[in-house]
Amino acid sequence: MDKLPRVLHLTEEFDQCCLSAIESIEGNQQRKTLTETFTSILKSPRHALQNPHYDFTLDYIARNGTNMYLGFTPLTADGMFLQVWKGEGQGIVMYIPQGELVILPSSTLHAGGFCSRFRTGNTRLHFYFYLNNVAEKHYNTNVYDDKKGHFSSRYLNAEGLDDGGPLSKLFDKKD
Image (cartoon, rainbow, N blue to C red; front, side, top):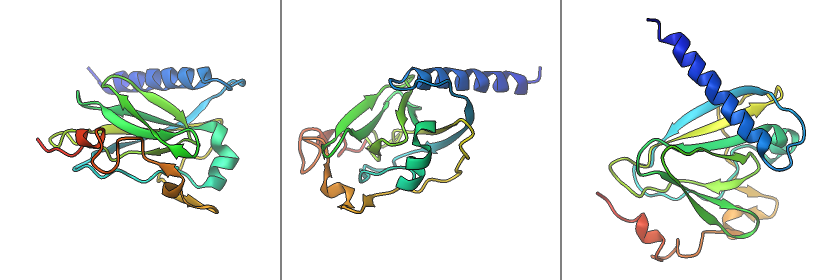
């Protein structure tokens, strides 16, 4: 039996589920079409928390932001962690369990690099969803600052994540 049609069917089903989720996000009033999905596999071989960043230039987000979304899902039972910011100040650390997919607007300032289990490296998928004929970028251009300076000076890590705090202890161990 040819497995390719089954794989194509599964990817089409996945795309439709993601598009439905994106359309249900508050504020999405118009019907959207999914143009492309780009996926990367990430692994954190050690705990090295990223600085807050956007995955696209601010100009590109300003032009296309309502038609681009990010997705994150873990590939191991360890799940994954992602820090996000709603504005200046302290971030929020999200835990995403295996089997769940979190979809966020492309304008979400975020940081990964968490490693709670050395053996698996919190292996995960990172999706870029392009809607309504926005041209897919096969690379990211992480942006860590703007005209006001480096984001890490205004967007701080979640409470307990810095300086050996209780949250940081989850990520300082090796198996």
